[in-house]
Amino acid sequence: MMGNAQLEESRRYLNEEWSGKKKERLYKQTVLNLDLVEAYQQQDADRYNELYDRADRSIKRNKLFGAEKLFLEHQYKQAIDFLEGYRVRTAYDKVIRSYLLGQ
Image (cartoon, rainbow, N blue to C red; front, top):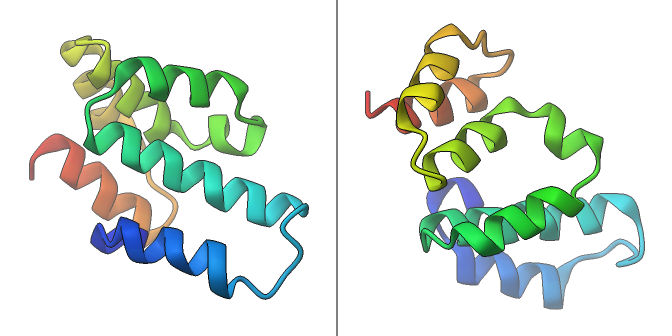
């Protein structure tokens, strides 16, 4: 749902239909991922940076979040240079990389 920009539906699912425990790491990471997507789509650099700074290593290891952070900070050349050299590991990351590069 997040990949299709169905953010409200994603939030509703997390709040109302999530079957696991909401204190578990997976739930917290999923909520943080949704928050990052929303902040990026709203071009809210302050919120994005705040969320990114408090994220754990698994989020920061995903270099695409770092590239989004660079775009929000208007560091376009650095973001593009990074993305052009970034070797993606999954089909999802390939789609996001292409999206960020405008391909």
